[in-house]
View 1: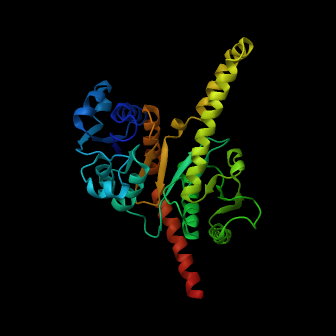
View 2: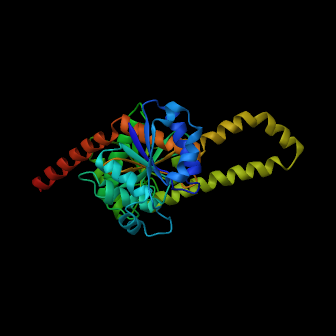
View 3: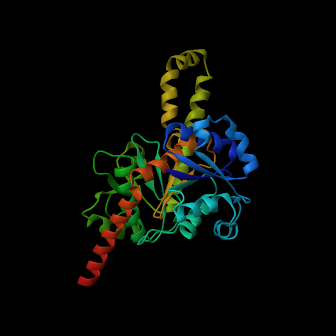
Amino acid sequence: MIIAVDAMGGDHGASAVCPGVIEACNRNSDLEIALIGDKTVIEPYLDKADGSVRSRIHVVHAEEVVDPNESPAKAIRCKKHSSMRIAMEMVRSGEAKGCVSSGSTGAIVAGGVLVVGRLKGIDRPGLGILLPTKKPVFLLDAGATVRCKPLNLVQFSLMGSVYMKDVEKLSSSPRVCLLSNGSEEIKGDDVIVAARERLRASDDLNFGGYVEANRVPMGDADVVVCDGFSGNVMLKSFEGLIKFCRGLVKETIQESWLAKAGALLLYPSMKRLGARVDYQRYGGSALMGVNGAVIKAHGRSKAPAIANAIGVAYSFVERNALERIREDIAQELEKVAAEETLC
């Protein structure tokens, strides 16, 4: 299996991506990587790989890099020799089964639509990400489609359910809920209400109605569906709260020798807790609704997060999630066409 990886994206560029690629290849013996970027920058980092791993990493030279401050669509259209664009073209041509980048979110979404292409029947793509909650919760959309129609939310629900069943291997039928400002049916705007009625009529989903933001960390839903604006705000709130709590714990420990002594006893448990809420553990966001496994890694990703993002792409392909999404969307289109005929 070949996964194309943008070596130049993110805050750390090749210094994080290359070690992450090596780690991912060590984990999966059948994984090959097309590592795309400036060859002179990349190759020194690969000297640390042993022979069996190095032989599965193929460097593809790219002359350009997509800058996060550029217009996303313009950068994808104009910078045809950028590492991100080449990675996506490899997915479109079938040379690679998927691609990973920690570059600009906007450019990745634009590239997913303009280069890789949307799946037939998908109106808009959505970024799906696992949240560090009591149990894995898949949030969709986390920032790709800022303003949504009811159709978009229905399609996000179908894709999120497939992801949790086939990629995360959830043992039971995923409980899908719409993010709203209350659990009562009188809550929600016109878009949310219309999506709720369509989802309630679906036989393919375990639809659980509304979920409030304060219940998401408790695992009241397996899949939380919302527009990209709300989802991105929720995601950033999670990240900020986790960072705040870590800082607060450290400050409290420093207040007395007794707290310091207690912290030593609690250190193993606190270390495990820190790992549970570390964004690097979850790797990256899957751009759902495009014709390939396109994974957006966090911009701050270091080697472990890059390796995990590649693992997300690997699992997405290995478990045939794309074909399952195609099937579910095709069935939904057939139902909509039948309803329109009856009307």
